[in-house]
Image (cartoon, rainbow, N blue to C red; front, side, top):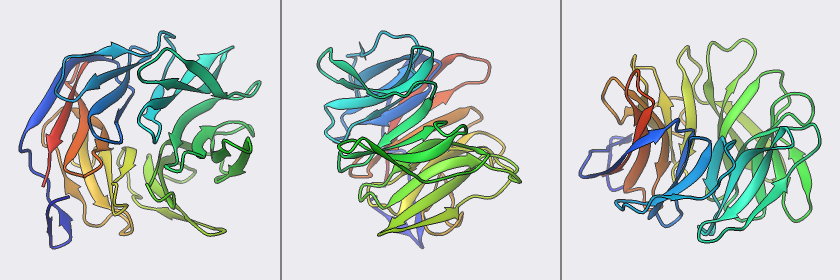
Length: 279
């Protein structure tokens, strides 16, 4: 991020690379080097170079609901249906290799986000009868449970240092989906509700420096992209988009000088994906 003004993030559109015509957009990500878009539309994973016309379909399964880049930028993790349940699968960007990474009989895995150490995944799974957050250790093939609530969790994201997990939850007594943060501090696990209000908040993404969260919210009346401080519990909120359409699935570039997001006009199925320069 090139400029801060009195603690607020300042983002102005300097240039836009836009791609239109995506249907039923379910997730969006930018590669670790910021050059490639990865997204789910029409229940499969696609990739496209930022500013390019090289749209590529990476899966042909018709059941994909979520996808994220692996830390190496050459692979991706995604959620797809297998034998009647959602599982975690892994693919490579340039090849045809697809493999199931995580599947259990009678269990669904709804979301996945990799840690940047390449050794762990955070997943939302109903493996104990209710959707909760878990860490899956790839080498040990073992789980660490993070939440145990009768509510719902969704759209997790992990900071680059691996110490912070952002997600949204709809727990008992809450008015709507709120942004939550888990801080992993040694053996201690600390929980904070960052937004606790009647508004719909969705798909938080932690900035590469770990200081900010970009997310979708309808707190202005329309569904817009907002940015806030990770540790300020809803303070320093800055509205990024200003229109009456749905803006969703923000993703940071590694240098924080660009922000990608999707836009869908009311009553339309097609989405536009934009990458805006910031300062």
